[in-house]
Length: 462
Ligand code: G3H
Image: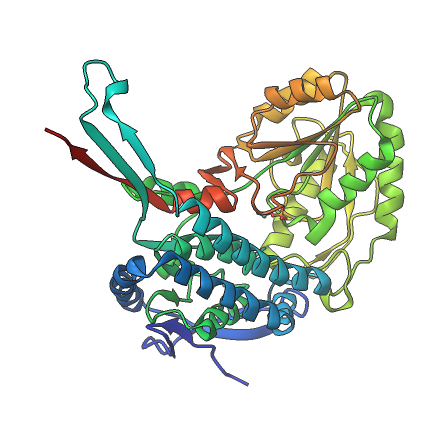
């Protein structure tokens, strides 16, 4: 009906002076579902200024009070799970059940962050000088963690709520102000989530949410941002090409279940999705067969029906995936299913006998298409994994724990899962990417620490 969702600044909902809006296209219907304000650079600057002012007072607000407000926001967010999940269904075609899970997980994440924050920020350090050569015990160093100032969070489309609160919670508990630039698809879900913080009663200007085109008020891709950022501390979660290494002694039913879950949940649009299977030749046929049987049972269709495979986020994403599939076809990959696409909806596809000269061996489809590369030794698997520019997660399937640990040590990824598919959660686990997969470590505890700096006061005795 032409309504344009307002952006959130200085504790109120506003229309942009630009008079312009950005349309959000529903991936399923491919029609404009919602519209959000196209904020101007000047409006973003104003929000930043307001955040700076609000942050000063917030940093002086007792830690327990900050935690109390976060607990309140978490509870309100959970109460609002149904309408927020509906936005996720319409904006990013997340299956209805998964959309609700994202909101509930986000509420839990905020509460856990509040609890963890009061503990880790409630502690400081005392150092004495005489441990360092040449010193007497005449200096006492007191150090504690202080906020960075204003934190800017730019979550991706695949978790517009959860990957926003994973920054908002740690930033706020640590005494920072927070400016959110949500992904265009997912912006309305994010605005609704911000509304929950508004209802919880955070001081005005402390949290704001600006919407608009990334090219005007957002940023480039992660690596480009990092080049421009200068002295600003960064935490980034970027792409991945998570490998699943399967050895001969693995539990093949477990492997097949994890390949399907890891490779195809949310249609492969997770940075932690299994993106290449590296499997020992001797067990490959059996696993491929088991995976195919499971893929045949997946429900393909609209997210409202709780389908397993739903339309991918944009037409250009679907075109990109198709490009990878066609390249593999030309170069002789075995298609375990017929390639099928309607609009943004791509049916699940396993590509067997993929070789290193195919783009899909290295590139990240971010869709329901998974390559299988057959290997003859664990070393071959490790080599393929480490030849990638990415280094997010990986997984190994074997019953030999000693071998698993050695392989894990050899894999150049931020996390290795033994006998399960890659995943970020539980949300307090450290989560980090090596190489082009990111900067810094997330997970609740690490994120709180990353959103602080150390401040020392040294008492000098005569
Ligand atoms: O897409 C990147 C997310 O951080 C992955 O999270 O493993 O919970 O799906 P997830």
